[in-house]
Length: 92
Image (cartoon, rainbow, N blue to C red; front, side, top):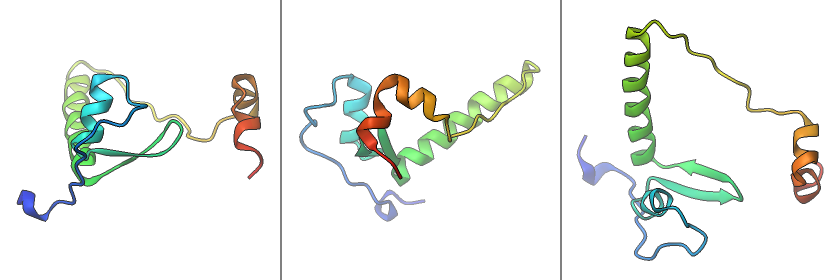
């Protein structure tokens, strides 16, 4: 696919809250966008990179006989209460 057909929203400036260099680079390259505190949206370029890395890791893990697991996204409220995020985000 031609790069001219990709949605690549690059940034000239590094966001102030991005401290880790990999985080800064992914934001500036248009791979991810911050949605909320700790939540990010994968943009087309970043998702493509993520899928390629997943396939490489999956191939190597399969060669070694490893098994893959998928864990739930929904978590018990107790975990959120313990970290203080339950009060921060509030009810649904």
